[in-house]
Amino acid sequence: MVAASVFILAVLLVYLGSHIRRAVSLPQDDLNAKSAARLGEEQIVIRSPDIAPGDLALSYVGGKNEVADIWLDKATLDVASRRLLFPGSVDSAPARISYTTGSPPRNSGPVPDDTCRTTIAIRRATDSAPVNSLKLFQTDGMAGAQRFRQVVLDAGASTLDIEVHTDSPIEGKMDLPGCHKLLTVGENAPIDLPAIPIHFLVSGGAIDLHFNPANPAVPIWTGQNETFEAVSLGDDNLRGAGLQIVSTQHSSAPRLEVLSLHANDMITFARLKLGADMLRLDIGRDTEKAFAYSSGSSLYNYDLVDEIQKNLILSSAIAALLLPALWKWIRKNCFPDAKE
Image 1 (cartoon, rainbow, N blue to C red):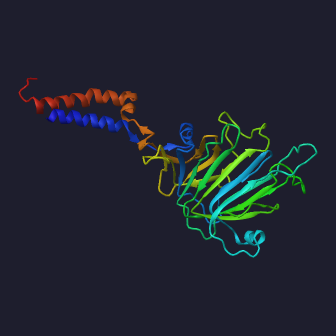
Image 2 (image 1 turned 180 degrees about the vertical axis):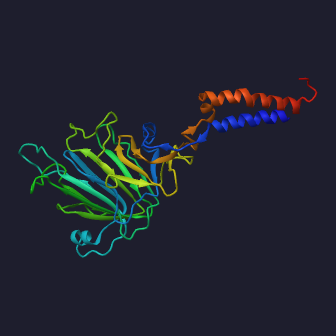
């Protein structure tokens, strides 16, 4: 029994010595490759993001050939926008609001070679509660290779302030593609928007953003994965206590979990990439360290046994001293009548 116990203990020590959790220095290419959330199946959750009141949670500055549309759940217009667009109206209950692209006015001349630019700034509202987690996911399977790219943002119970405006790069030229914007509030008929900034407030609802090329023959996707990368977390990056890639279909351990090395440390998240069927971002920057897990198991481990095997002096000492001593102890205690 003693010999069996010693053997089991030795096996256990070898296993534990080969699986000692260790922190990894960021960034890591293999970790970034695992940070993709599949459309309709998973979501990216940034834990305890460092977003102060008035700080950006997500931002976008449009470019040539880029058209942006927005759908909001549980949203309201801010007071100034409501008084301007719906004079005489009383405070309205939260409703579904959309800011979408309408058909451009007919133009008998040549097709314009430029596009109106839409700018989106999503901030934590001034009097809002802290953002406990920021969720990013996709829901629309109609995106396709050349249709559009989508990202849905959900800050839970925190209130977000969204400012959006669409402007022409050519002064007074509002007949370019993407210039004509429609605002739909609840069950009201869509209204044509002038070229002015509009503010929305969203609390406990989702913010659904779509981006597509004004000219489908000239895609705005880049790279081998055809991702759209003009949307930024925060102003250029966002810091948080950790990240999870979790399933939206069943309860299980996160497929990927990255936690900061110390409770007060933060991890940087940047380069949000919008694919046709996935979202991906980059995790960490130089000098940052984190623990990483896959389905509850540590991804990066310190292998003590391997280190011993690589160290000639240490492995020789164990072979010459410890192992013979262990064998002598076993013989003495387990086989006391055996002769030397």
